[in-house]
Length: 258
Image (cartoon, rainbow, N blue to C red; front, side):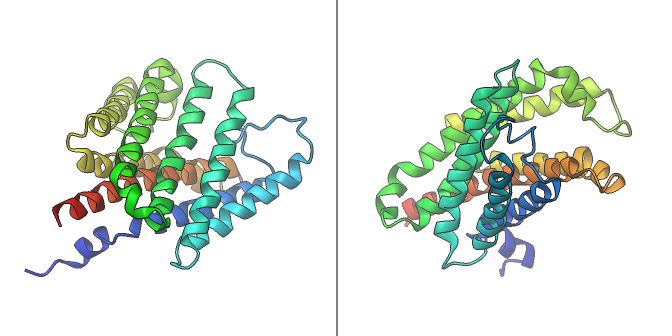
């Protein structure tokens, strides 16, 4: 039986890289149009030397590296660029420790690093050796970040509830706790390696719902508020990173079978 078109798309080994490329291009454009770092995801100090030129450089590198993920010749250097960028964004949170936000911000960027690192690992000259432990590192790294996401939903419950669209049936608290439980389930599945690939796919669907229901409507109704577009884009970035981890696990298990 031949696989259908949708199945062929989903099974594309570089689909996740293209998804990450698209989402980081969108994130870079939103940051560029905002004219600065996006404070909720890139909280670099106001007094940082050359802040605005560095913000434009960051946005440009996001767009260029995102575009580079679409092409085989530039995919590896693009992945390395994104690893460096998102590590820098994670480090920027070290200057703003308050409540649960720093840990959430750090985890969001480290999760993206985990996804981009799978692209680098698959294309690295050391890829043959990395297949032995790389998938385990990626799985546990994203799993730990997902645990932080779930705990953040509970600790910052009111903030999470404020993101729930009013038209959704049921109570906002239910959806805040339900999605927090979803993050925890994804994290546990990845860490203990039980239904891990399925967890990456279901978790990606959850992120897609976040982007479509919590961020995109506000971006469409307030198109001049670039922070909303950035929120949509960074959600898709995390979706793509999780999908990439799933791809890495799937391909490593296919190699083991062969």
